[in-house]
Image (spheres, rainbow, N blue to C red):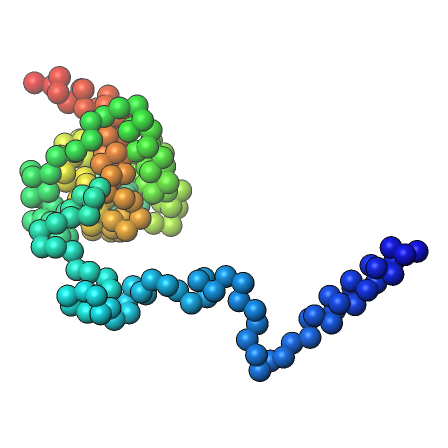
Length: 189
Ligand code: HEC
């Protein structure tokens, strides 16, 4: 019986505590999270040379892990990508597996899981070329990287969806898909 009274008293306090005085702010139990201590990214900053919080990167520097691509869209740049860019990642089972994940996610809807150009989207979209055909087999790695990055003709650009690292890994996976055709091509005199 006593316990019930204590319980009811606690409930009364809890309900009473919910009444709000709208003219006073509520209790801030973690004030550092309400009022940020560091400067906001775009706030003026009296401590930096140019008065901005976000500093401009020093000239000629690149962020760690960033693979810069100096080539823009267009056929001339695609041609240059083919002759200038080299795949920076050596092939390995992990690299190929990562490339396969990216291929199945981003490319197979159009090009098909086997790269034959027969993905489910072709029911409503014109059929893309087979990636196992002689033309695609003969494209240099850098050219394929450029096609993924900027797109080509009806193929949309995938630069914003697929990280540069994964684009190169995708090229390795594509080569394993193409392998029988590539071997046959090399053997033909
Ligand atoms: C929306 C459908 C679509 C998606 C998604 C797509 N492609 Fe394509 N792809 C095309 C079409 C259409 C072409 C032909 C472009 C043209 O007109 O030259 C093409 C062309 C290509 C070519 C050049 C083939 C050749 O013989 O010239 C390559 C390589 C390629 N795609 C790779 C990829 C890869 C890798 C992905 C995934 C990141 C991908 N594509 C995603 C539709 C697509």
